[in-house]
Image 1: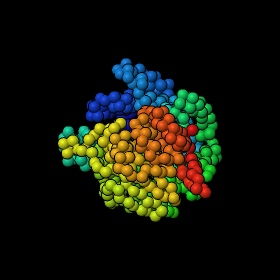
Image 2: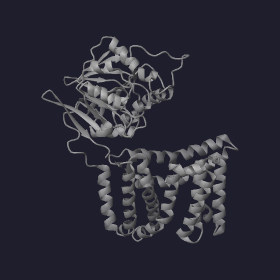
Image 3: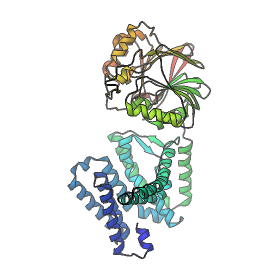
Image 4: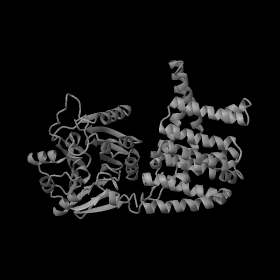
Length: 522
């Protein structure tokens, strides 16, 4: 609002009054929730830096006062990651931004120098905390913020206006809200496309030592950046190196192996399995929780056509990444369990399928299907758990009906038998054993990420040589459970895990199973 106030001749303390009034109105309209108060406090700090004298020294004093006041109002903020990020970003902008802007302004227009310096300073300040939260360091955040920045003002002002106008006229507010949606769409597009770049982020250990090392690296970068930013040739070289790293990242040598049959993608705490069905073609069984992770894995495997996506059940750690499979690929159909629960997840899957005009079919018990060299038989579910009062159960966790209704598939490819089990719990495992079906397999995808709930008779009946466990590093569930690892070892199975090895590729050579891995975290 300050540039608009300047246009009509407001100056000096009048700008401070305008800015302060806007912050107060913002808090009233958005309601004084913790995140709103945090944004308002940081906005006041920026206001002090922009409209008052004293430069960064005044801004630092204002930031200190804002932090102390917020902590006195709500002491729980001391443990809030969002609060830490807000404070660090603001501190970076007011303490580092001005000098970096001046360095860039030696060879760039002032407006562009400011546009680059602000997100760069905020990103450097926040990087250790972001790495602690996500286990990743972003390589595209500054560029993404630079591109999204011009849309932030219009989206905020129009959305702000719509909230106020709604008090007077819903129809007029709807029009203003529709206008606000266009810059918001641009921000979403930049976020999605940026995260989708091959080298958008680099894995980093989210440990005390890892974060400490990264903090030291960021401090070193802070000391060196002023000189680097003032030299256009050095900056150009740095940008070229960064662009190459983001657009054409160096892959692990030998990944993926040319003759892979199955890849268990490292999708975090979830399942994402890929069966090779021909050149640039694969059957995908589950998608993990994160669209970016499964999309990255399929891109590394050069998968462009997916005749069938099988979703063993509708929990988010198996179906949440579906959008990543659909992105820039042709998908023939989506095969799902007939147990449509949890409601929010299955509706999201059906909506995505409708948007992309992809048919959905329910699996049937003991059906046999073939896609190129890949064939499979559905061993489960033989029956669907009862629905309480006609509504799907929303229970989750161990022993849930959603897990027990998982699709189990005996898959054959290149002479190998692969038993894929979703999140089957002991109840369904015992039922499959009781059915008398031949469960012998070369490879077992261990049910439910290796949880402690396994039926020993089911595990023994597979007689598998290799057990694959798909789990997230340092996950909150304790998967895989030590007791399950002991059970698999007692059965003489070799164990491989995505949480320790990264993505896992299965190949064969002279009738021998071979494994290749692509670590995606240190």
